[in-house]
Amino acid sequence: MGKGLFIVIEGPDGSGQSTQTELLARWFKKKNRRVLVTKEPTNSMIGGIIRSVLKKEWQVDMKTLQLLFAADRAYHLRTEIEPFLNKGIDVISDRYVLSTLAFGSLEEDLEWLKKINSKFPEPDLTFILNVPGKVCAERIARSRLSFEIFETTDKLEKIRKNYLDLKNYHKNTHVIVGDERNPVEIHREIIGIIEDYKNG
Image (cartoon, rainbow, N blue to C red; front, side, top):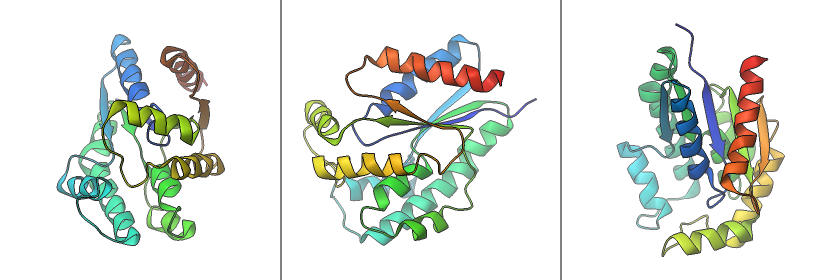
């Protein structure tokens, strides 16, 4: 049994990564491939603490938050990602290491963030959805009533630029234009890259 494919969808909040994750999972299932759809922060106890911080329900300093993200990721890899990949099941994760680097470096040292995430394995493929901060903020405002700590227009735009600066951090990372395009069109582009990778 071969190892599964590890794919990560990245981007600022509101860039459409959840939509693309769902579309991609459907495509894998239509191909009769077993697939795990997962996300970060996880639904673990640590993930719950992180979400409470993001929603401004609980306050910690940014360094503590980034260490929580690293702990949640270690748990995620051990309990979900690696066991499923080793069973030959494909894994699609909504967010992974690049999220920590792109979001966390707004307030913390990028090299420190890289160091605390340096032992985590690279995905086989990473897709960064490139959507301007203003568009992301407008989408968030339409979809829910409140904003999380990283979800101002200025922060979302800085996060977008951070992602672009990090596009070579992991091999096989692809930047996908995500605004003013139909989600299905974006999905087709992602599928094309995956098929090229598998055939390569």
